Image (cartoon, rainbow, N blue to C red; front, side):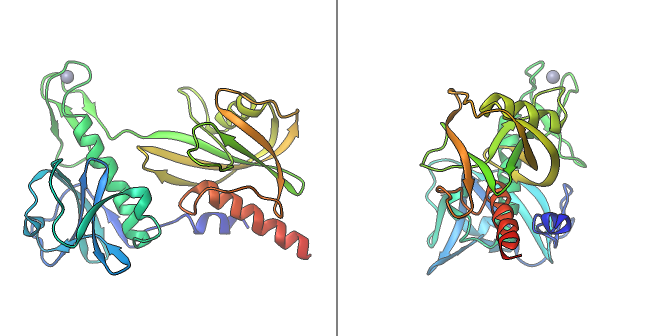
Amino acid sequence: MKRERMNNLVRNKDFIASVVPPVERKGPAWWFAFQGNNLLVSEKSSSISIPCFNDFSELGLPVKSQHYLGLLGDRFCYAIEVSENLNPPSGMIFEGLRQVHGRLDEDLFWIAARAIQIVDWDRTHRFCGRCGAPTEAQKAERAKKCSKCGLLHFPRLAPAIIVLIERGDQLLLARARRFPTVMYSVLAGFVEPGESLEETVVREVKEEVGLSLKDIRYFGSQPWPFPHSLMIAFTATYAGGEISLDDNEIEDAGWFTVDNLPPLPGKISIARKLIDWFITKRSIAQRA
Ligand SMILES: [Zn+2]
């Protein structure tokens, strides 16, 4: 079961990340172009894809910045930022990342998730946070260096834990106030400076629902580009306490069996992978 937990989270087996662009580029490349947070996609009947051309200039959209991402199979991949207020070329649209998930090829989706974080980092780190001087992109690593004081600025990543809590044939699901729709999910929270991931799991669960845990185990991880999180997922077993809600964060929480589940998060999220893992495990147990 443990090996299975990991394998479905290893994605883009054919993608080789790199910062240094090829000296000579032949053949079409994938262009992951963003206007704000919206990705440029081409539409053909019901399916969508990423523009694939020899050169992005063929599309006639002025480029604000360009970043090499790496190689997918034999095709080079680039992140591009284009100006606001430009209309997409004919047959293409700008769409939010969440909206394209499930319609875009999975490999391309996760490269787009990488691309948006590089573009966002580039546009929010043009000046040094310490002295305010302009920064310069480094050639051999994904970093920007202050032209005056030399401080290095790397892409931001905010690690967050997510945890599925089991109690016999039940799991704990909660409805967070930040959820836009009526939906229940497993608990999640950001890692604070000085904490181990397991300490974050224990603190978040105590704060949000007042429960104690045991058997905290790593499940897998997933980039979450909204805007720059890394979700680190765990499973844990209930060890004591009564549900007591943090009213600022949690609207409702409770124990659910697999035949009595509320509306769940979409397939894109590792939250759903955790819940699906539990459903599979329980249905195997029920059949035995
Ligand atoms: Zn500086």
